[in-house]
Image 1 (cartoon, rainbow, N blue to C red):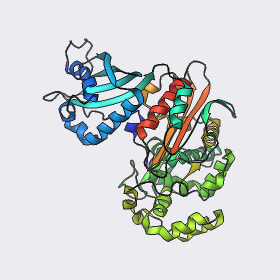
Image 2: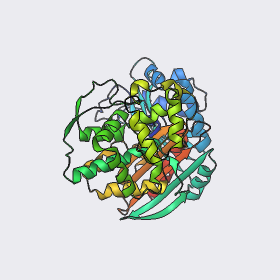
Image 3: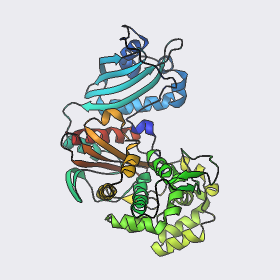
Length: 434
């Protein structure tokens, strides 16, 4: 439910430098700070250079050493050991691109180096990965080996027709976290198209929720446009913006929109919970209500939500509950199959709304390197402990065809790895671009 970290979704780690470097016209001299740090990448990932010696304190604060080591281990598990730097290019001697060869492929790395004493690294981001001899069969086997339940779909979209290219369990229902926000965007776009609303309409920020990266601590009823709320909801998965839109558009209208897209099991998402309602029901403060909710039919669930609407608020969310393992992801979440998500993208594209398409493209989820081969790339992801979902709608540069790449991974027994799913989805996207 909480928004997936853009850093990790962009393909493993990113800490942008706070300093913006102007690029002079002349080529930087050899042996710059950038060159030196680029040359050390193999030794860094192999553990032969100390983390604290390589990274600037700003990076260390944003990405603690334990997190960095975990991400490094995941990279090596997927792509093999780092072997050599194939190339390192920079226009200013401080920031540039490194092509780093691993045993199984080549990673494209954006690297930034600070200007302070020791010139340590302030930003490191893997923006793409090219696997040697990669194939859909290879990725499919790796997905199948993951713990828990997985499903994915890579398909071309021909109008309303879905033409699968590769898939595993494309019709199974999975918990999808914040990917459910695509249905809210679809209903908003439909109401705008019907002339009921305008993207420029100004409304109050009326509802607050847990894990709201854009609206946290904002004053209640701050005026914002509908387009702003949509952009926040999709690009940074802001939950306050999401809940404000659900109350504004109407819960039952969003449910009808979801059914209209062809969702194969809409009852799983009825009543269409706000994020704060879901967080509250998952927490220890509402154990009795949770038991009753899970056991009830749609009508009784709706009545329970209505009866407790004054209690199911941010003030009563038990955040401590979410510090352990996965919680009720099989019964208290938002659900869709990979095919359902493809149908949602079909409906969104059918709106023929530039504003809607632009909202999905603000954060493409995989970074600029992985976007190679696509003239358009829209994205929505979702996560909570035990749940990860990544879904992309792209227009292929080679032939102009529209393609969906979506994957969900659920494990009720343990957290699942953001780095792993990001790497797998990035590879599926690269294969689909060919």
